[in-house]
Length: 307
Image 1 (tube, helix red, strand yellow):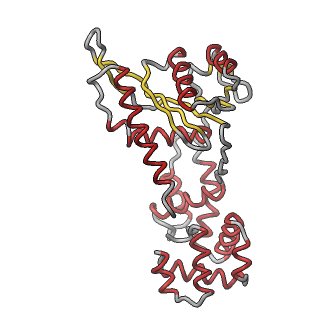
Image 2 (spheres, one colour):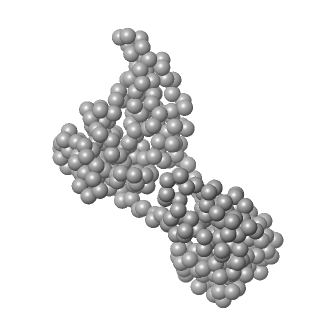
Image 3 (cartoon, rainbow, N blue to C red):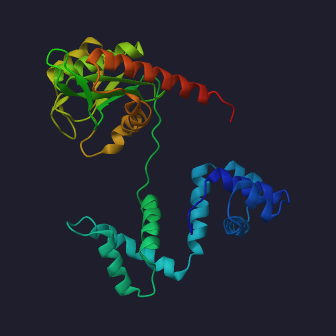
């Protein structure tokens, strides 16, 4: 794709192979890159005038910035005019009712020979990542435990009435190891929530330095950017286990991206394989834990395979 920065490890390999006398055709085939992409990065490398050792000495972030800036110097006037349009577009998109399609139509009025809709959206996505970067979060062992409920509920059979009942799907994940716990619970009420949190702590056989819940009512009575009010029962649990509660910020999904990622994995590997609506809560949880153990054992084995 035009003007999309390739993974830095591949750029390093392109330069290494080229410096060792390999042909562009060989590099393209070996790295599964298009010949035009290989030509582009070799040309940028020659423009920079740096030695292979100097390239290797740079971090990925420094290398990406270097190649991005160099590439920006050689982009076409047509693409440059598009990038010049994006800052205004970003401000307009914050207004109610304004869509990317509306802004594309305005762009075409100014530049009749400009990019069509699909390329317009593609370049806006690339531009957005450049001006709104996401910082990589490093997690320390034992630092945080992220907890949340999955959006999709599970179902059980009530043993007394025989009726089908919906139950909640609770998920907890450790930040550093991404070790995961899950269980079905009758509700998201504070008693069930606190019980699930305690079950997760016992499952992990240790208490994290902090527990990070979403801003659900069973955890946070009153949301606040600086000092949210924690549910008293949850606060008592934190005091008992000598930990602290750090609610994710409201409307900041990246604060709890780990647990949301875990939920997606559990949907595919556990949720889809459950025999719902044919057993009680205890039997459903037993099935969840068996599937969870199998999934995490397989993930551990995969991580031990040689790269």
